[in-house]
Image (cartoon, rainbow, N blue to C red; front, side, top):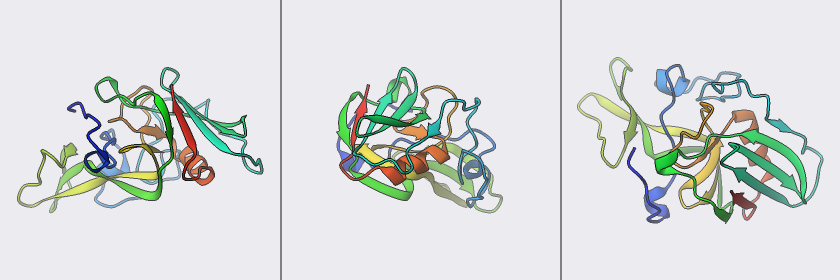
Length: 201
């Protein structure tokens, strides 16, 4: 994908989805089909076993804070300085990196969809024509339809960049967002507030 500069929230609104690998419900079908995996309703389970992610924050009070470590490809959730959860992540790939800095959660959207990325399918057959379509350059042809990429549990923190459920291939692979296993994005989403600090290292 082309490098995306931060030109403003309107241009980058939910600009971080990268295509799912073969086998994901989003890629394979026209409509969402729920699967009880850590990939959630639209994405497959992580490519490598997730022996890192956990949540011990239920019943713990205190001010939330999230630290995202790009080198480790992990996100840490704190309540009043106490570590209560860790999640594997997939942050932005080299040419569309998740930038370092101190941010705050500015929006929560449970059933968010990308306004820029998705797939183009043939209406009659459901066959995928373009599995990494960018609405700025890719337009559906006759008999084709564009489906916006699903980004469940979206937590915006830097322009169009946010944390959300997504496929984890085991390395940084997104357009800038921070993908998480579905069960961890649910815990993070339920425990953050608008204004929650997010530190990206």
